[in-house]
Image (cartoon, rainbow, N blue to C red; front, side, top):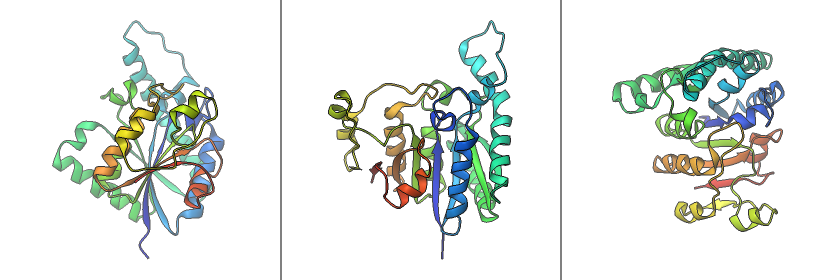
Length: 253
């Protein structure tokens, strides 16, 4: 039986559980679910969190621009982030690998082919690629997007069956219910233009995404015939609960 391929995007707010440090418990929760699902699904992960990982250890002295400090923090934090993934996943019998990509890689045919070939070899040999933007040379995701677009481009390139974007809400809420402080999830989306009207432009506390970047990501995925789910990653067991339809989340067909 051919396994279904899931591209899982984990934002900073999910990885930190909305605190100031990476949550080992959340990474373990993700690993435990992948271990349970590995006979039927193969996973590629796009993970934010390098800057959040660095902030646990260092406070940089600087005279430069804020963006260059964030790039330096990403450089410090990326190995720590990968170590936490590796340690927690290894205890569950899962193997990880690191892939650092930038948007320019998706503009060149040779680069795209190389990415495809490498990731396919990793997945075929039961390694889980953990992808982040190469923040030392690129700043797009630091400034806006929190890896949402990177996840969608990767999902499209790797012909994923499903893009799951883990965030800190139960999917996308109707504007009216959000204003009334009784959030109600939009369960199924057919029209992205109509959806745009429902969305707040506010950004998340650690991440740089917000729902607008998630809708842009869903649009990229949709053009490649990849379905997108926007799921509350703060909840334990969020992947399995979504697959078994036991939780409220937004599906963008």
